View 1: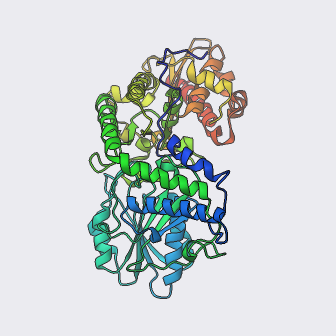
View 2: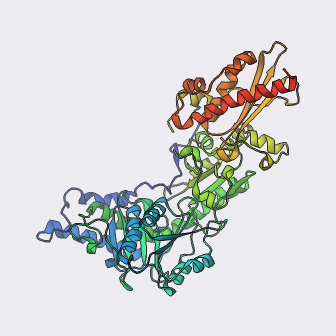
Length: 413
Length: 127
């Protein structure tokens, strides 16, 4: 039987704590978009009438809004369908354009699947890829990067903020190193754009992938920053009418582009105050859950991180059963059992987490619409269930009896 | 994960969670799985003189279907003779719980746990 809990009317169950997966759209963004679905429906590439002109104007405003947030020139912003396309376009596009000159790419083992998979494809085409390891805190070692750069290195692709563990890579240092060595620097900023200050000039970024739906904008739209000076050239993936400076053909989805622009504008204005509020949530949740419950470990660096992500391992409790227990909270897990592959998260394993701890990790993500009450409710829900599940865990029992479970010869299956 | 109502019921109201005294001569303990694989089951049986399983307890580290599989296993074997209990197959458990294909290994583990508990009991009693 479903137990009815008394929940304050302000809390909607399940409480959404998966802001790294996606975000709800900000109503201000939706309002900005609506006219472009109906009365302002023109093709932004139509040059012969006012329907086209007004759409074009809206697209150019959005381009300006996106560019301002990263200190870029609007002409350097190419609209795409999202960060996956942007990452593919940047990595494959640069590789294919420069393949006769340079055939080596450097990336990192904790990158998003779309970056890793794009690199794997290039390997099959004969490119060479170096996958940098990360330290225990999830950050790359800049010395390792320095050693990996060779005369034939074309591109370094390192994400700004990790989607699973929220750590911020040393982007400015990486950019400086790349510029000094004449290597292009691409960063997947899907989780960073609109969340942390980014400056393509100060950070020497040549290519940057941007997503709309991670910043309270619509799904299905993103952007790629492509530097003009020094110029970065890409072979387009999508050929056609030559829109977006020939980098990405196809009619732009005006309402989505307008939404991305508006979302970027709001993010820019509210980033500081929002981060302060989220930092407060992080501190409270960290104190109560990570420090307050025995054998709970934060994954990823505690300082170099966005405050809206807490990825924690709850030792001796398998992640999926935890998710079922805390079903009043919408969260995600690095446990294998929530995926089809039965392999625990490759990101957590890259941090050196043992498989058994990787199986116990839960990602909590906060965001713009998270309230203090929801954080309190989440803390209470987690605390209650950790105790109940540990009472059910044979590993917890063994540890309480003083048995070192790492010394047992387990038979894998 | 779309689980059957039976899995959810066993997960939310697990039967026979707990431990029996593993030093007791009449108790057999099975510990199967591995933390690295994300599943560990401990299943214990208390057997009377006639070879009937009087009590069964489990503790499981694992996903919802692993917990449900072990909960169901303890429910079934209570009152059975050890010979009967040995005939329980993972397919019986998987069918009863309508486990999705990706979770079949949980029922395999439950079957292994029953067998391991029985063989531990037999080893103790030298049956």
